[in-house]
Amino acid sequence: PLFCHIYCRYSAPEQNCLRTVRKMPTGARLMSAITYGLLAYFASFLVHAALEAEADATVNIGSFRYIITGLGALVGWIVMGKRVGDGVKFAISGGILTSVALVFWGLIVFSLHEMILESTKMRYNGATEAIIDVFRIALDYGQTIATVPFILLMLIGGFVGGYMAEWANSRFR
Image (tube, rainbow, N blue to C red; front, top):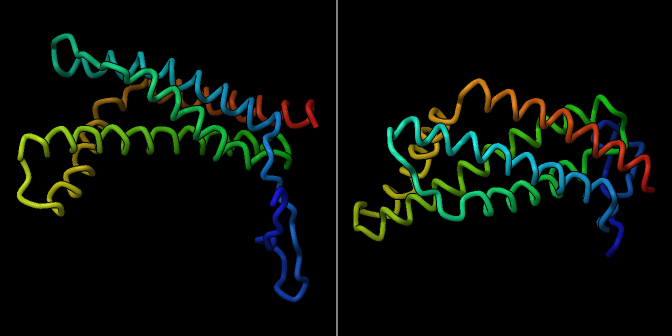
């Protein structure tokens, strides 16, 4: 269905408050996908620099920029696209939340990729060890990319992305 009704979070149970949620593409979702895709693309340069600084060598990242850009657009569409329409301050906080979600899912996706590469070399004794190693790899990558420029870019990008999504929501109704 194009519309679905969900119960309001903050209403009393006896009020039976329903809120209509649109599942169709909106201008805010499109703007969120574009801004967070761009944010992820620019953040990939900082991640690449941090990985090279840690390895003290040139790091081949392959199609990392394209994958993280697509992931940024997807996270922007799904996470930020739902958090518009309640005002600028809620959109900005939703934008920062979307930046955090982008970092989280980026770490998980590339940790899974690294784990699969390691498992093809038969480095794990079982599936449990491989799954646990995903989180160890994610923590290692997280510590590597946790630099001041990266954190500032994600915060400012989340701020701008939330504002732009709210602007698009009010402009393209």
